[in-house]
Image (cartoon, rainbow, N blue to C red; front, top):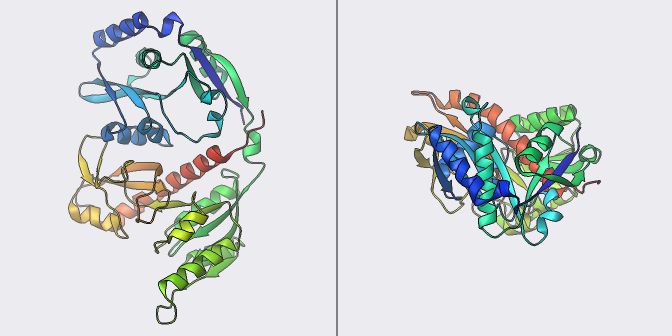
Length: 382
């Protein structure tokens, strides 16, 4: 596994100045591109990023500004700059120094690659950081000699920090899974752990249904299960929530994964496990207060929260659904978005058919969210 490097650009370089930006704009205009600057409220851009690139890039674009290129009414590419309050481990050093602004991510649609779109968008982003008062730009977590050379040619970037990635998998994160049903996401995580794609030590499964097939999956994988069923005639909600907290805390996990968990957790649980990750079968907005979310084609649909999100989306006749991994709050399905991906619903498609196509996407989104947890909590060997 290759090391990562942070690159630093001196924004006083003429390649980051107003003349370079003017040349970039002129070149893009001549090539038929229209430009605009988007902030985190541009849902269409964020959804397009998720559809094209996956991972966590839309979270970074949400936390900053982006210069966006369109051609023939379609997004062709973007470059984010000035992202704030990101928790990735590689942003704990030079990134915190005065005058340093964050560059990226940036991406170009596959059909638009091979030209100078990316180069010009990057130039505009560097110039925007300079105009905002930053003196240096940090290009974080770059992997590969080709990209390092690209940024060196583009803006005189130089390596300032190096991070060894091998130890990400040398120490496995102690993890508990909570699941109420079939456990297909649980199985997908188990499978990725088995082939060393995810550095987890899954030490337990907690379920609240005796009939949950997740129990069988746990036994087959030699994961100790705990059955914690709420008998409403015998225990109050507060008593049951305390029992759940004790059951999970007994494993002393670093990470808790809610993979099809069907019970809203209380404030004490959220306080004890603030980095717990939940998977939800809908495309949720980054702005947790919003009741609607923009999609890659510019349409806007309801944010389908609740236990029957896919059924509700099909019943509403919308053209999109998706999957979102998010943090926990006292309000269901409103935690901070960690990773997500949209999925088109075909005309007259059944709930069962949508779910069958959505499950593999959920698996990818869960894996992306776990990797983000690793990236945010890593202690790098330099």
